[in-house]
Length: 332
Ligand code: NAI
Image 1 (spheres, rainbow, N blue to C red):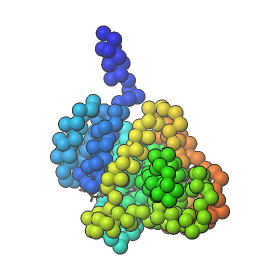
Image 2: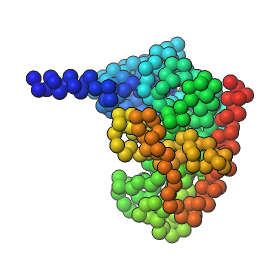
Image 3: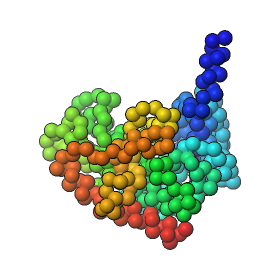
Image 4: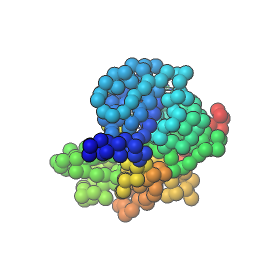
């Protein structure tokens, strides 16, 4: 009797039932990300969309006995995949090959993200949208422009996923400092490519690292993605660690939507921090809440060295953001 009541209370509670749509679910990131989302008990409806292969991924993942339904959608079913979504995660797009920068992906991925954003604006305008597709510094502004053009832009609901940089920072600092990475929490601010990735080691217990240790460590965090691209030797970029990062970020978004307290992640958002200098989007610690962004946090105390990195990153960020905005203007 007691368990029946408890079950009913649980299943009728709106704050624990969420539809998450993964666009690009058949890909290297999309598949393991879908798997990890199937394990998240807040996800009650998992909609997997891709231009190829989504129904197969959905059938496979659906056999895992967690309390959620999973459905795969083909290209002609994007509307159904998106309708009612609370969170949309977008890993659709081509990955890097050796020698490529994230910016080299712009030409292909910009139009993929633009078109998916148009559909999201039409069919799920209130959803929180998390962008994994690179170059994140440009694809996030692309989505913002599309949403603005359709009159549904909510800056609190758009996120560039930079969580992989946070994971790498924790892992790499632990290798240098011989600590348990599980206990390492390094805020990473700025953007998601090369020199725009800025780990704030001064805000950790490792603030006194000698420059000859710190500089290579910061470089490794900034360019860690290249290690995976090189090792995969033409077969793509980070997918498994990225899936873990994407699942963690999506989980945090859902925790925020559910009204949990003190849900904080670093993420690339429409940010007030450096708007007066022309940097419209910036990654920093963000408290997530029922409306999406609850609070964008400032950088806090940072070292002179980090001040220099932030200063240097701003020019690149302005150019990357402008490139996304221009793309939508030229190719609406
Ligand atoms: P992938 O090529 O393995 O998978 C991409 C998937 O997107 C494919 O299944 C493809 O069919 C699908 N797709 C292409 N156009 C589509 C469309 N219009 N609608 C729906 N699906 C579409 O690539 P992977 O390795 O999964 O990477 C995906 C993206 O994530 C790349 O842009 C990559 O650069 C980016 N990435 C981002 C990271 C981050 O930290 N934010 C880290 C690693 C990769």
